[in-house]
Length: 137
Image (cartoon, rainbow, N blue to C red; front, side, top):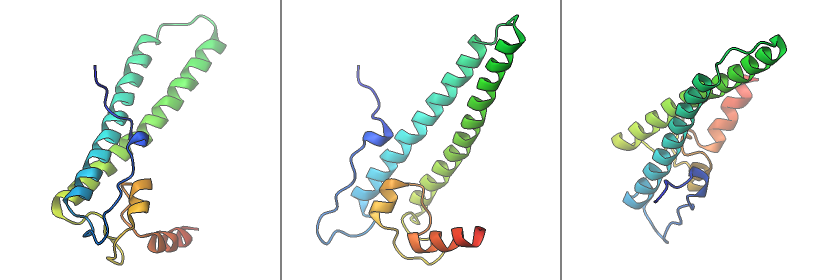
């Protein structure tokens, strides 16, 4: 039985010398990486739903019940953040489809492959992201 690779275990893309930015090989790599990541998040969300349904039996002790409810709330908050991440992955896959992936939405320059490997959903170069984060403070 083969299992889907883990997002973190996908090796980084190593470009060839003088390789064109966002060529077919790079695009294929990032599409694969994004899809694996998305599938992992969906799988974890389904597991949470099953876990909550299976562990929702009434508990007599109010302290135990409060602990269980707090654990469920924490899991649901985590899944909500992941749901937003799935939407961002879908948006990124759309950017690949329309040919805009890998370029900063603010200044238009290429986002480095190292940055995209670390955060495949990055839509700003490191300089523009730093500036926008400083403006948020």
